[in-house]
Image 1 (cartoon, helix red, strand yellow):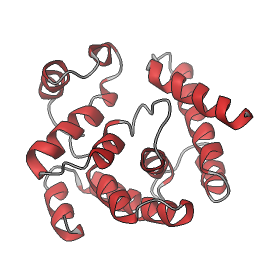
Image 2 (cartoon, rainbow, N blue to C red):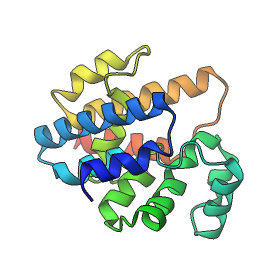
Image 3 (tube, rainbow, N blue to C red):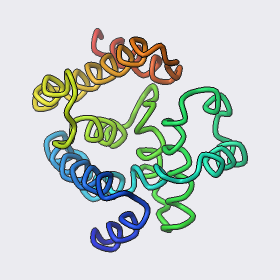
Image 4 (spheres, helix red, strand yellow):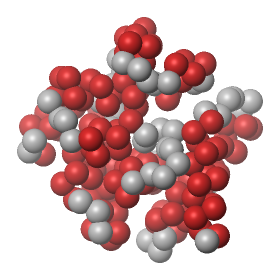
Length: 188
């Protein structure tokens, strides 16, 4: 799917603010793909569609998670996680995207997972560090992303886990598993 057609589809699903975020994620994902030898077209497409389901009704996302065989434990954690797997499903059904790499990058951009692919790492990190993001620690992660993708991911995940813990919120297990996987591989 061409960039303009993809952006047109996505723009209808998002607020203006979230659409600007999506453009930032797209540009950041392309830069990261260039830097780390990823597929730029897949990075662009996954970035454009990563928040496709962000503003869908929670009941619709719950139904998708329950009916499509996604882990039901997702429903016991923050609903902010739900738009990723729901988005994967909706992007395939509504936009006709069927590339499994692109779909998985959308699915795991909020939680991560052990043994993430390069594309999944790029989308996760691009979502975290795009230029419109402003929160404590993001500049350090941006700097590390210029040097080492996995170290930048570790920093981003640590920040996310710390943020959730400080707010007395639950942390989805795959996020911990992703952190442990990356740390273990870094030590090897």
